[in-house]
Length: 160
Image (cartoon, rainbow, N blue to C red; front, side):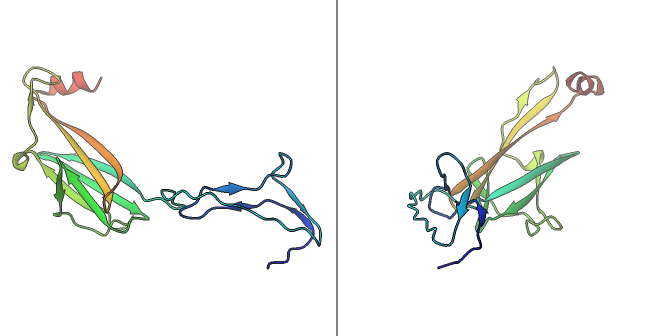
């Protein structure tokens, strides 16, 4: 049992597997404590709730034959990357800010279907969608549209 000094307090309980709980006293979030105050709380189970859910930060940089994806992970225990329902294992790094995971996508080695004459006549585009998992739990998807422009004019038209 914890003893607190007299004063105004808020009680918020957050735990994996339970709904977050904030004590309300007649609509007010504040509790005024005196020496004999006690509070009983009932928590509702929610097996899917995580107080620190897994998340990622993703970016990409285009190069002459594709692009490089960089991923920073937070609260991820078992990191998995999928592309076209296939797991990718050929990436480098640690998933940290200093050493993000890096994966190089190359149009010359890709099974992703080309779309011809999109966005302009002569252009070729690829819709590349990465899916990131913590084990089997989907964290996020990251779509990239890679376009091989047939001319500088087409690129300028698309970037207006």
